[in-house]
Image (cartoon, rainbow over all chains, first blue to last red; front, side, top):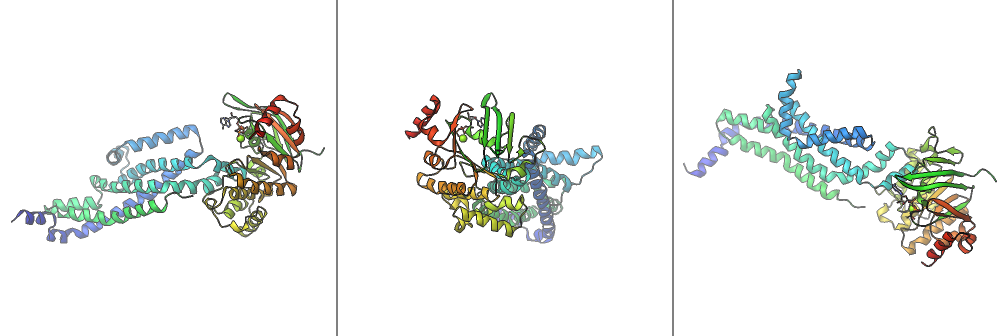
Amino acid sequence: MGNWDRFIETFFNAKVMARYWPDIVDGLWVTIGLAASVVVTGLVAGLALALLRSLGWRVVNWGIVLVVDLFRALPPLVIIVLIYFGLPSLDIVPSGFVSTWVSLSLVLMAFSEEIFWAGLTAVAKGQWEAARSTGLGFGQTLLWVVLPQALRITIPPLTNRTIAITKGTALGSVVAVTEILGQASSAVSNSYNPSPLTLGAAAYLVLFIPVVAFGRWVETRFAWRR
Amino acid sequence: MAEPIVRATALHKHFGALHVLKGVDLQVAERELVFIIGPSGSGKSTLLRCLNRLETPESGSVVVDGIDLLDRRTDLNHARQRIGMVFQSFNLYPHMTALGNVTLALRKMAGKSRAAADAAGMAALERVGLADRAGHRPGQLSGGQQQRVAIARAIALEPRVMLFDEPTSALDPELVGSVLAVMRALRESGMTMVVVSHEMGFARAAADRVVFMDDGMIVEQGRPAEIFETPSQARTQAFISQIQRH
Ligand SMILES: Nc1ncnc2c1ncn2[C@@H]1O[C@H](COP(=O)(O)OP(=O)(O)OP(=O)(O)O)[C@@H](O)[C@H]1O
Ligand SMILES: [Mg+2]
């Protein structure tokens, strides 16, 4: 058997692939569910923090900056492990899925808060003044005048950051989440053959290439024009 | 004299250690057009912004159309609908059409339906000669047109007083006339106006009174001809001759 055949046998083993691809597809659905949950909760929490910060309550803002810096500094895997193995000592026993979801949401919250905040502060002060001078209140000005402009500036960096963080769903395999990488890993140990990893990589490509292409489209579509 | 529609009394305002308004009194009668002139940094904008409480003076009082703007119980958002303001940099909302700019406060604050707001908004755009630009975004309008939309946004709320902070300073010279024409028409309709500007020709033609400010104080005030030709204070004289050289 030549090297080439051995390579094919190892990474593209048809028999192994045929046996395990349904597991990988199961994993794909878990990854999609996890990623979607992270995107929703992470972005909602990030926007909520940015809006809270815009109220300008000093002590609250210190707290926000502290939390945001904390979750931007910690490696996501460390947060996942801390939650998964740490919380049970407080009698809270999160599943691997929940640990990963919460951790990545916190990370996305932190990064997106900074991006939303940068967008909000980038809107000229004159916009606030003009709106307030017509009698619009703080909340209405934020909602109708400032936020739409801020979001527009925000969307390209936000899309990129969101994609980067949702790829972190693969870290869930460390805490027994049966997402793509988790399924692939157990298939590898059951079959003594790494071909399921190839399938796993293919599944990630199927999932993320459209997402990355979407990000590229968003970036050109929302390039700022007045 | 009838009760003035704007009555600011003994205003003091600091920015940090900087004493920007040093006891300013200003009264504006109904239908009066008051011009405020003075060197850069003399506190003109700050005074104007105190009149709709974009700035809050530390002491003194501001009463507009019978509403005490410094009273904590005053509903500021309600009061501000009676006080239109036009800014040097237009400050139109770039993500909305001209009509959207004009109708936002009508819909959200004055509680008008979209149809009623659109009708009022179109009427306001008509008054500034821009009904045919209702669907344009600010980025598609010239500076002069943008400023006229900003005026329409303010007058659509049917304010009792209009405040203008250097409305033509950011405009190319050839566009100044169109904005001044709108302001003149507004004046002729009987609007009470307080205008910070150095458009001397307009002041001469339209102002009832010119107020000269320097270093946070009102140095002197009077009819345009008095202030421009026979000012009594040396500082006024120096300032007038300086701007007339330009
Ligand atoms: N928000 C602020 N914070 C700190 N200082 C300020 C602020 N607004 C104005 N000032 C200062 O207060 C002084 C008066 O400013 P103001 O804008 O009222 O002057 P002005 O007469 O309108 O001048 P200009 O003709 O240049 O517009 C200036 O020295 C200015 O730098
Ligand atoms: Mg000024």
